[in-house]
Image 1 (cartoon, rainbow, N blue to C red):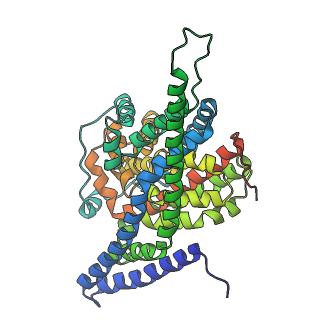
Image 2: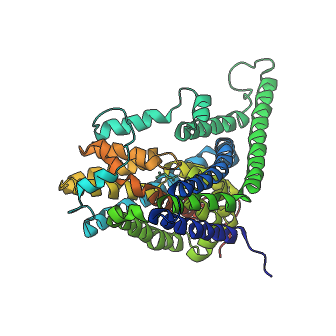
Image 3: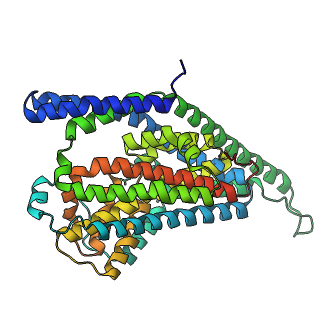
Length: 448
Ligand code: ASP
């Protein structure tokens, strides 16, 4: 018999979790089983899933730091880094923007919030996440994002899992390791010759080289740890599916069905039409072959709802799809934090839906503000479950909607989070393929 691969096991685990969880949920609702038993089973599932997610999260900070520093120092030349960085960020913003436009078009077509019963929604609403500050305008939001990127203390950023400032510091550190390692010895002609200067510089260079090799070693070890942890993915995935199915069932969809469907259809268009077209024409890669290589990462993203947690697997899978490590080690950690097409799309749809529920007719200009702030919110959102939901208050306040309105959509948020996180990870992987195609790396990306 053919040996099953990891993604087959993950799929089986998902089916099992849903297959056990949904009937349990029905039985609990109909009174055939004590609902307390069902919720205990759901909690046990969540417990198992959380353990797996914690193991993955344990890898993330050292992985991001070592991967980015290795990526930057491996490039050697700063011009090359600038080109790669520019292309990567440009590509990220472009795909997120296309995703938002898809969402905005869909929400205007489906009108999921028109005529929705606000009272019914409020009855089922959870508590909205707390946020500081009242309504802000776009400039303030942009400024806050910029400020937040620079860590006052990089070690604290690492300890708090603050990815954007950590990424910023890691890139800068990588750049300066390279600068010290490749500094020139003083030319005899330049100024007076100073005794011992050559030795000093040789010493500094070898220290910087040691740091480069240290981070490269750390990166290799982290990747090996990842391989070990992901063997447990089927258990974690089973637990999360059991939790989602037994704990929530389909109940949430009865009220928010049309809204959830709008987000889902828009995400599907982005994942099954836009990104494959980009892969084919810009990346010159077969979308089917690429999606197949990405399967373990996509399924893990779906069940954990965390692109940061999935990052170790994303790197493995994208390399399996033929993208050289030189590119993945820079593009993917950055992408897991700033490139969230699914989240950007979801933010825009959710806020426009809420506006419709409140009977507000947003003008084209206001919809443009929603699009722009949704883009910023997706850049600022951390790659963890529900981060997008918390960031949504930024978008709501930009168009003067009450920030507590987030509570209205919480009931279906977990399942939508699972879907949007999958799109986030897939979009990162597509970016890596396209960037690798145009990057002047030493290794040739394999074509299918
Ligand atoms: N959970 C998403 C992610 O990790 C972020 C979000 O909440 O939209 O990519």
